[in-house]
Image 1 (cartoon, helix red, strand yellow):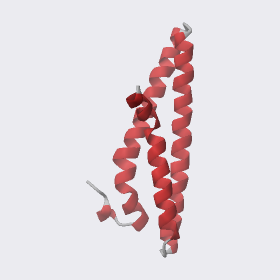
Image 2 (cartoon, one colour):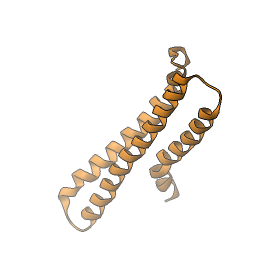
Image 3 (spheres, rainbow, N blue to C red):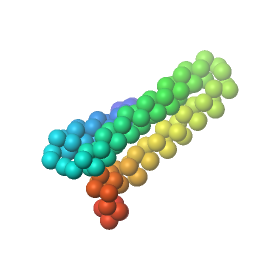
Image 4 (cartoon, helix red, strand yellow):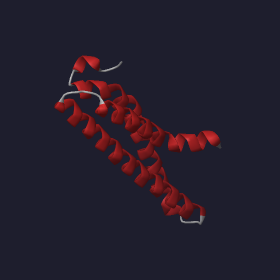
Length: 112
């Protein structure tokens, strides 16, 4: 049960860690363009959390309706779950590997 709960809250944990990291980097002496890019990444994390929350509520709401006997809500459960999987995959495989390259505006910093 704990693994299931951790799977659902993992994006929020990553977003919180990113927020702390970006806040700390924003206080360091950096150029104005890097500061702007850090603020853009912070806004991106807020939007990612909002979209993930929307799909999470959709998943839970449709799951409750499915348990009560509304079989049409199975489509909402599947769609919400697939979108959460997609958002997690984008966050881990794309965003985290390209964060430093985006801040420095240097394509050679993309992690493999």
